[in-house]
Length: 159
Image (cartoon, rainbow, N blue to C red; front, side):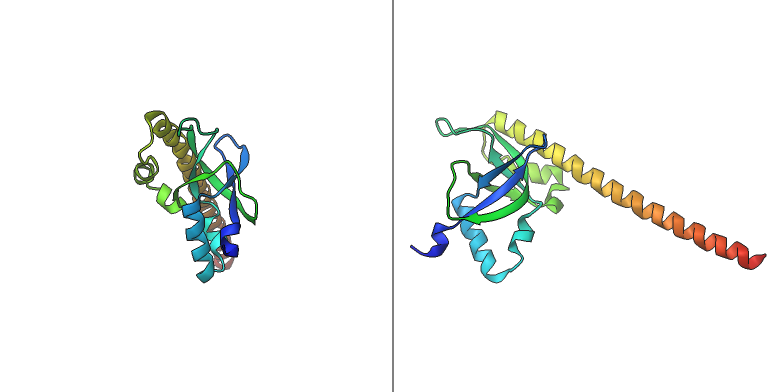
């Protein structure tokens, strides 16, 4: 067994309610990320800020309630966990297309999980939109401030 198979990737996941919890990354996603790490030194930064499907409780008879959380931090450890992520995740850019992101993440889950995923995704989508609006408002304030400064200089020169 190679050293890679004894290492586990852990994501610190933030939930829509603000709580945070560490999740061990699923085997398939872990293998893909270790492959990515061989060619991309910044692979951790490409995952931070993405939105991933996770269970909120233990699996019973193969089912567990699911939600979507935001990746805040990444650690690598030799310890495996019992709370695993799912394989599906979307980037913030993908989430701006809410319908496309939801169609991808809803997968083949039961209706109550599809609804929980929809609610969590709607929260994250709205948060992204609020962030975009705040950035635009700051840009507009900066432009207005610069225009006022230019206008002030122009009036001083004309006097």
